[in-house]
Length: 192
Image (cartoon, rainbow, N blue to C red; front, side, top):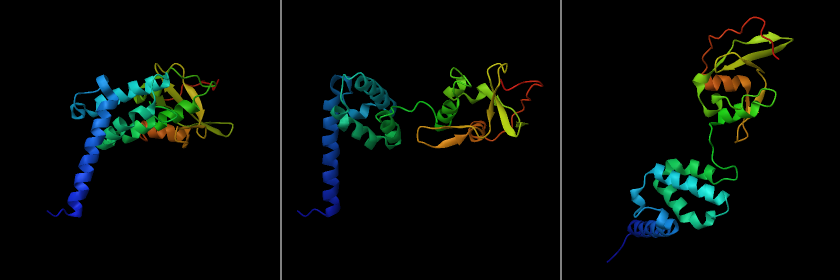
């Protein structure tokens, strides 16, 4: 019986996947499913988030779960980036890059750490029209009940986790989708 190269490649590939599945099931032990196909992408990510926490607490090692991670990436390619970030040195990414840059821009001079903006709730803020004072251009970043707007220079900025620098104006435009705010800065509002 002759086997073509294509058939041989398929046989080797199927044997590799089968072997990987066996190793992954062994790695997960009692914490895993009876069959890897029983779990959805969300199930695997829940498992990986718990695993990352165990690794952080030094109760486990990433090396002991390589087959499970490879299998999940193979079955759910859309998870690859999230899995890579989760087990990277910086850990999971909990915010979109634009909100990471906003968080970085938001220093002790502008204390907004508890703002729901940082959870990506774009409806929680508004941005004023551009104002000028002493040659500097500002926008006010307003959130919550609009009683405490905070001014940012348009050229101020922050950096996301990937190292991309965003100006305040780029951050505002990205989050608002380029929409002009209807908010009018109250007369007499100062920068301090």
